[in-house]
Image (cartoon, rainbow, N blue to C red; front, top):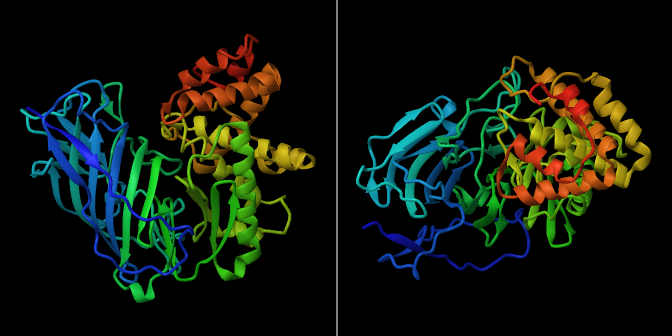
Length: 476
């Protein structure tokens, strides 16, 4: 007889203001109170998606992190599972990830296989995870963070530490999505993204080894208390910390937008905050509501920007270039990364095989941002942001398809924006925006595919756009 779990959530007092306040060390509460009961239909409670409980201690000065992680995994695959596949991006860095123990439903597991960023956990043959049942994993591990060397790297180094900042991104093991009978875990590449994320809830208890000298912290989550953060219906949980951060905040309805930056960048930091708040309003109106309580904009000590759930990193170089107007990278990339809170965070996709599904939509969302708020700058945006690079090529390419980083961006981001511009011109504004809203609504919380995109598009127009497809797609 396999048992089902009823999970009693811990009720913790909430805090009205986001991070940037002094934290104090705390003893972690129990990760979860479990009541095991016999299976009866009235008692079965299956969560809609998995939950990650991350009891985390950070030694900021020694660049080390210790984590006691609990994963609550409901099996909604429609079949029994004899193993689980877990993505551990941190293990791609030499001497970074050290696994101490794994248990499944309280039983130790020692016959796991860890290769690069893939951890395969076999389950006892007599105890598979049946369809519509729940299992619980516990992993204890240490992270020794790598230095974010931007000089000798082919791409922006985001995970690790620099002289002014520590970033935890893709830092915890997570169960890969199970789709079409297989675990979806892709290989990293020199450019683009490769991880595919399921929807999950996060419960993070965060303390520092030296609370008397701890940094200012930005997280994806909402601060329920001074050491406890939560985030629901999300793809990722990111953390950034620096002793040099200054924080500005503004309210957009029920959402607090927080901007984290070095003090010398106060004007640019507040401009990034304002642009993100404006984009949040525009995209909520055009596509659907933003789902979280906070959005954090974090100045990044690297030459790129990058999205995560309820948080994005914004390149320090854009702060250097800010000229006090909306005609600059600081503004339109802030709109871009905010757009990923719709096209990545709420509507996900396989970013390695079909990156245009989020990057083309997000780049074109910049155009929507400007036409809504700065219509006189739309022509400038196309010329400066897109057409300067003379984009061309079929946009339905995977990240692995023989392109370098610049060519990949020109094709997927910029020519992808031209595809959406031409599609909109062909089917008309009313059908185009109705399609975008419906595509968002139908795929919110899912991992969308190209077939989903065109199926929903065809529900909103009978106009022939086949010649547009032939210009931009090799497989349509």
